[in-house]
Image 1 (tube, rainbow, N blue to C red):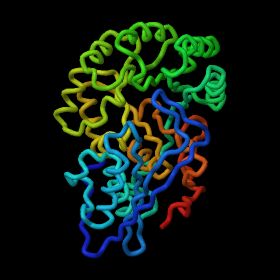
Image 2 (image 1 turned 120 degrees about the vertical axis):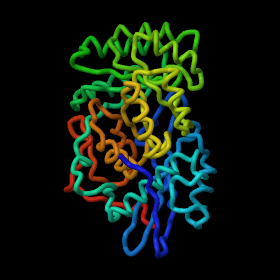
Image 3 (image 1 turned 135 degrees about the vertical axis):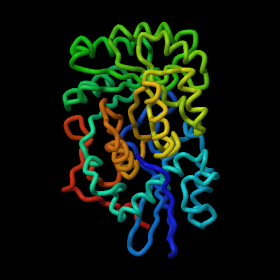
Image 4 (image 1 turned 180 degrees about the vertical axis):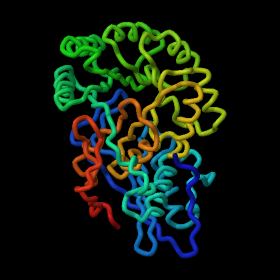
Length: 358
């Protein structure tokens, strides 16, 4: 686990910012939007030939911070107005900036080779079991993608629901289940808050006949009383995702989980307070026997590398959501590759950061 990370230097630390557009290899559809590209920033800390890199990748309409707030904060860091301390109060609600600073400092302090933790911890590069993600699309496309993931060896797939006709989604799940039993294939669903108060229980009941592992955020965030009732009554275990965004105070985290008590929480360091803030969520959840898994927030391989190494500091017992490295046509070349439904570190592949170097 990671505690407070800050830098105290006698010599000048050079700071650079690089804005970068990641281009999706297909239109990535959720219940909120269709994404063809997404903006990210790389934060460089450099001194004496050592350079640490962190990634700041807020998601418009989902992150608490706006893109303009991120630009301003990064400029202030580069100009020295904000110190090299991710716990500076001015970064409290800038989760993606905090994550970038934490990981850039960790990378720098460990020699600037994209290894963020002590090399004596080989578990940081263990293979990580992951789910196969099926994005929203029409029935035929989603079925084809699900079958492709299963043929690739995935025994846990996650389908985004809430965009196409609900009867079609039920037909999709029925088709998959006729071929693959619950003992063979675990199915997770992610509704991104798409269901409404007047139909959510009915839909959960209809989905439950397909032996669903869990459903993320069936209703939109901020409906605490309703979410609490759902967690108590739903035939499908519920996972909180968007519900956690914007909560950085320890007491408020405890109050939310005590009030709702979900089966799982889904954690993205770029959205949930950086590495330290996300680690605190895990500690609080464990005290309440709530399980968790980590996912990326659609960062490039720079951010994915940091999340994978951080997550491997825990005893991972269920598939994680870290298979996003292949989403972009212009991603950073990385040793992390998806092989046989696992995110694997392949040391024979070297990092190539030439696309983003200042």
